[in-house]
Structures are given as structure tokens and as C-alpha cells.
Image 1 (cartoon, helix red, strand yellow):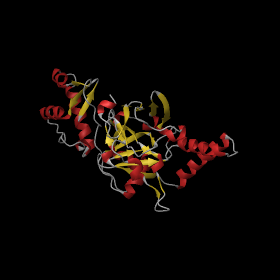
Image 2 (cartoon, helix red, strand yellow):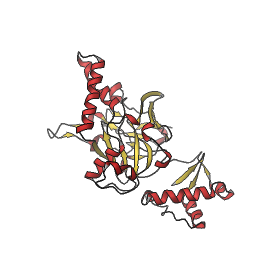
Image 3 (cartoon, helix red, strand yellow):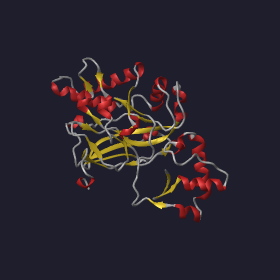
Image 4 (cartoon, one colour):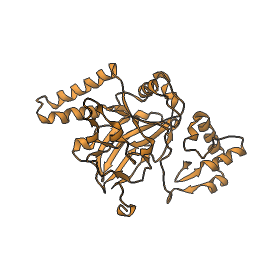
Length: 323
């Protein structure tokens, strides 16, 4: 792990050595989730070290240019969770798409009904959350492997929230104190595998729809919450082969970040380094009738947090086939 400084990085191990010079301790740099174990103290220590040394010749010598380096996911989450159907724009688009089959109501009426349903859900409903396995994580510039048996792999750009303090039965008003920071995620989902038809009546099957290897690109950066004064002002976009497919601000969420943390922590124990994918706006491939195919280039980005670029390939294909 490393701290980004301009167009270079400084390894956490190097910062740890600098910290010892001024009596500032960092957690062990080897474990991918270690900075989040005691995040407030870790963040304070990092800020003190960088502030003390950033203008020094020694700090400059410790920098490594980003160009030519492989960018991995900025961290490996212990647990990952995905909030589903959490954007008003997505609810409106789904209602309009369903009406293509003959609903005589006007688009304005359908839009109003969808938004009213969102507000009713906010007042009396709860977030809908699934698990995402850590084994699905890849880096922001790695290839997305598409399993041979899937027909409708779909994209979902989302704001990723990283937990910085253990959370269990957290109240909404305290929930944001448990946030370490933010990152870009793309929650790849296979649409034809979402519904489970056998055994009858079992509903959705998120295990098979969301968890293939490579179905969770993360990054490129983790940005501490202190540098994101208003996460709801962040703009998310996703381009497919250069064409804009998703474009929305995080403020369009039905259940905000605090409400999601309150809900999830009521049912499980959130741990430092956990990831909460907070929902995706309108513009899925399901709407366009166009799904991911080998050779597609997916660029998912959030203003201020960076942008991913992932090439799709068939699972098992050699790297040379996509270069």
C-alpha cells in the first residue's frame, strides 16, 4: 500500500520509517487492511508524517512515479455488501421500461408514480442488501473475466464506502463516524441469474449473479472521508466503449450512507476495511438491451475519486488475446 502524492506514490513502509524519526507510529504495512484497524489514529499519523516531510529532499527521493506501475485494488475488503435498487433514477427508468409493453399512462404520470413509491419506501421500508465475496475483487485496470455460461453480464458504477471503525447496532446519527473514506466500484451483475426459479418461490440468488471472479473492480484510489466534504455531490459516470451509459450524483440515493450503515450493522458486525457498495443509478445494460461482451472497454469513474478502465474478456482467455 502507498500514499499518492501528485503523479507519484510513497510506500507505506517508507512512511512508517519516516514516522519513527518523529515518534509517530503506523500500523504494520504488510496487511492489506491494516491502516483501517485503528483508522482515526492511522489517518492522523499519516497526515502528520506527510505534513512534516512532504517538502523535504528525502521525501522526494522516496517517491516512485505512477507511470509503469501496476495499480492493484487499493485494499482488499474483509466483507463487501451491495445495496440494491437504491437510486430514484433507476426506479423511474425501470417503471418506464416496464411500460413499453402497453401501459397507457403518460411518462410524466409513470415518473411521478415511481418517485412516490421511492418516497414511500424511504418512509416505511428498508435498504435491500446482498453480499459480495472478496474473491470477486480485481484492480481498476484489470480485465473483467466473463464466464462462458452467462448471457447478460451488466455494469453498475457505485460509490464505495470503506468502514474505518467496527460497527454493530449503530444509530443513523452516529453512522458516518464509522466511515474511513470512499472509492469507485463497479458491481458486475448477471441479470439472467438474479431470479431463482428452482426451488420454486426462493426469490433472488445473488451468490451466482454477483460473485464470479473479477466481478468487483475497485479503485483506483481510496480517498479518506476528510477529503470528501460532501459525498452526495460526487458524480458517477460509466462509459462503455466511449459511450456514456450512466451519469448521476450520489445525492439521488433513496437510503443514504448513514441509513445503509445503520441497517447493515443491525444484522451483521461491520469490520474495519469492509466495503459497502451503496447502489447504482439508471443506465444499466438491462435498459439498453446491451450487455458486456469480450473486447468491451468499461470506464467507471467518480469525480474526485478517479476512474477505472477494464477490458472484458472471456474467462480462461489468455492475456495476449486482449492486449
